[in-house]
Length: 285
Image (tube, rainbow, N blue to C red; front, side, top):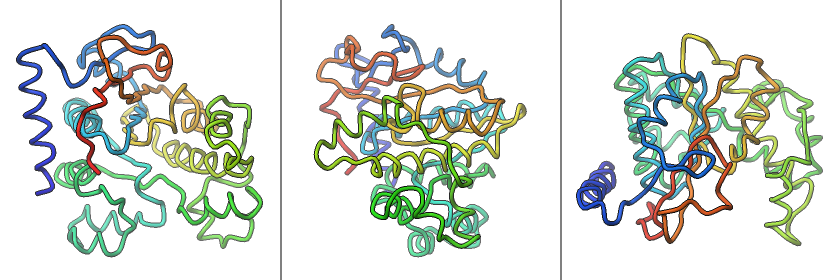
């Protein structure tokens, strides 16, 4: 049943693209010009890091993540990674990839997202079938929550050495003036705080540091994350550039609009490529 959603999306795409009257999505470049998937693939093929920013409940983004992975796997040595796996679950993920445990055991032992089976299992299973590394890149959520609730980055000082291995090296660099971090304060209003922004930053830092450990001229790292974590070349990418001077990145964002014939001004510049999806597209959860 876990692949039913993808079959449904494929059916929708085939029927809409056949008529060309109402496509399910359009790909734009950073300036808002329509481009093909082939154009996106060419840029990704020339990069050593791809940050694929998704809307977590958007089936088009998840389908294209799998399609991009398959396409790049033809000519590249891939490493996959995702925000959706926390670093202290790497052993469980490795055991699943190696066949030591099955999906039911993974579900019991690891903290899987509620939409894992529909949206991320196809990527993990592809990695398993093709013997591709899949890296858990994110900080354990409880540590990020502690940053928010217990006074900022200093809350991490009490972690054990093992626990600190699941976090970006301390102290972490930090720039509160980045526009995406400022946007958090605006969006959250009275509920926003500097420590809330730091909780976001420690996630970005940990994901960036995790990716940096695998950067190589001979491999391509595809990272799947919420679009907010890499929009405007900030977040993960900002940290990735702090931890490596060999980054050649391709960034992708996902947005939704009522009319996808033209990219709204507010979405221009979010990434090298913006996948614009009809807002009426079915959500995965």
